Each structure stands twice: as structure tokens, then as C-alpha cells.
Length: 307
Image (cartoon, rainbow, N blue to C red; front, side):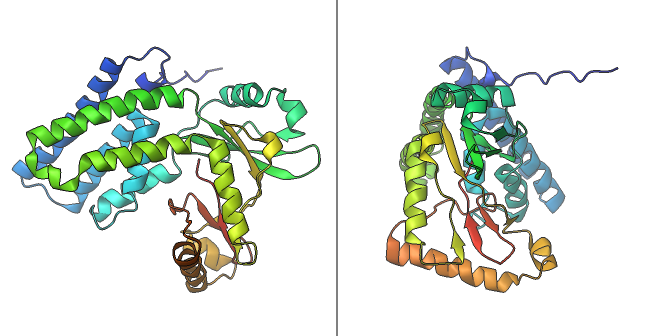
């Protein structure tokens, strides 16, 4: 019987990975992609097919570079005001098509953080993740008390990787501003500082759980908006256990219509929800891509927590 060889680990997945090596990888990927754009311009290649090819190349490079850069790609996938449609379509794949890490590693993190064996913590735990994204992955489980839950587990070694990545990104920002003075109008350093601040907050699952609780309280009297309950006894910095709320991704129009739901009504609910967040609460879900929003069988919008 043939056995499938394990894929070769990417550089960022290695335990010993220096700042210099990381900078080389980041700069190499940037130069390679920039050269491709320059070559397309020189050869006057501007067809949708060529843009799709370059966009797919960019997605592959972001996946190879790892979580920080996947997160950047996810943010760009919502910016139709900045990028051509071909790039938006390609980058949207990063919202829910990120390769998972091993279930053994996930269980090790859960047991180390919560300080109990997995079978003591959960009556059932599915080793196959429901979803995987840039910063973590989600496993379905059942508590001994019977509640169905979703267990979000952070990718191993993220903080150390972020430390390397932000050194490399800062060097890249400085390089671009020195070599191309015209980009200074975009205030790249300010964008870098804000992104850095947010990304470190996102790997603190206690902070994320507190935000989820606050969001849930804000919509306690709004039956068409659902947010999962946090199970604090099963939550830590690297593990977040939430009420399991299944649904259809909000961008799957055909599936929604197939069960009798009206996308226009769902849009109205979503718009009203965000107006309340922005104008009344002053507290909002700032990453509203389809990987974080779903719709249940009754047309209620579920705000899930991004992995």
C-alpha cells in the first residue's frame, strides 16, 4: 500500500528561524512579485487572465510566508476600492482556505493551556478541524455537560513568528519609503504600527473572549443577531471554547435561497446590525468577511470569531 509523504515544512514552521533568514524570505517574495508586475507592464500584459495569474501568484506567496501575511491578504480581500476584481477574488480564498496544522499539535496546546487531558476537558473532540485560518483553527467538541462547542486553537509559535515578521515588515516599509518617496503619502509606518497593535491583540484569546461577551451583551435584545457564548472554564490565552452555532456562510447566496431565505432581508439585517455597532455601541466587529459571518436556517446572522 502506498503512503502519502508528509509535505515539507515551510521555513516559518521551523523552530529555529533567524531574523535575517526571515527578512531574506520576505524581501525575496516582494521583489519576485514586484518584478512580475513590472514585466507585465513592460510587455503590456493587462488582460484579466494575466491579472488573475498574478493574483494567484500573490496568494501562493502569502500562504508560503505564513500567518502574518495571510492576515494582510485577508484584509486586502475586502478592499475592492484599492485592488482589481481579479485580486479580490483570489485573495478571498485566504478567508477560509488556509491549510490546518496537525490535530496532535492542537491537542497538545489545549492540554498544556488548560492543564488537563483532552478527554477530561471534553466528552468528545473531533480531531478534524471545522475550519482553519491564518491564526488558528476550530474543532467541534462536546462538553461532559452535553453542550456542543467550537474550540478555537491558536497556531503554535505565533508570537515568536510575529516578532520576526514585524522586524522584516518594518525593514520593508523603510526600504520602500527610501527607494520610492512617492509612497510616503500612504503613511505606511502608521499603517504598520496599527496593524502590529491589532495583530498582537488577536493572539490573546482571553481578550477576544471578552470582546465576544461584550458583543453578545450588546445584541441580547436583538433576536436576529446571534453571537456565541464563551465557556470561560475552557478558555485561555491560546484556546477559546465557544457555543457551537452552525450556519451557512453569508456569501453563499444559492445555498441561502435553496432553504427559502431572502438575501435582501439578510442584507437589511446586516446593515442595521452594523449601524447599531457604529452609531450606538461604538464597538464593532472589524473583520466582517464571509469566514466570520454565517446565517442560520431562520435567517438570523451569526457573528462567529475569526480563526
